[in-house]
Amino acid sequence: DVCSSDLPRRETADRLLSELLDRIKALNSDGRFLARVHKAVAFGSYIGNADRIGDLDVAIDLIRREPDFRKHTEANNRRVNEEFERGRRFDSILDQVFWWQREAMLFLRDRRRGLSLHDYAAIREIVDASPHRVVFQKSAHRPTRNAGGPSTKRPLAGNHRLAKPKLAPLPFF
Image 1 (cartoon, rainbow, N blue to C red):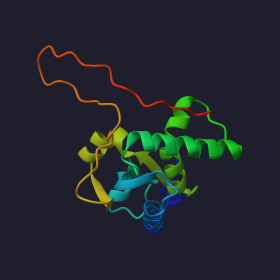
Image 2 (image 1 turned 45 degrees about the horizontal axis):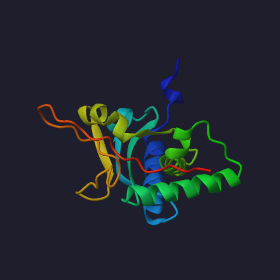
Image 3 (image 1 turned 180 degrees about the vertical axis):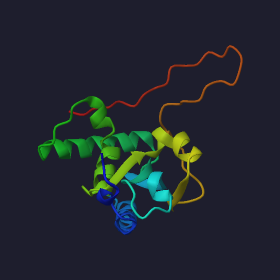
């Protein structure tokens, strides 16, 4: 059991949020990162009025800096190769393909105790349906996640035959 006196104070969470917002601004202005934060949403115990809260939960909506899928993939492959040269090992091909997101989240998390970052795309419905606060919003218009990439649209009705999407090559080695 966790005693309420063991939980972080609101002041600590406020400081963690302020530091996170500084890192979001730094990431968005640093061209070395292949991701940008479009939106950050605080949710969970931080939204209430209690002095003691659990972790500061923030859902992060990342978008690609480069909207062209092929150029983004090439840039991600270069970053993966740089990480290989530094000694990083990836458990799977998916870890390599999504390195651009992982690298951004590692930078944003900054090993801060009491800060829990989540993929907004994965939990959007849950976050939006519960008490939450948008703590960062890049712009009113959100670029398409799949711009230039494989289509995820489905026909609205009828017996439409879909062509197989052409995937960009993913050379990693």
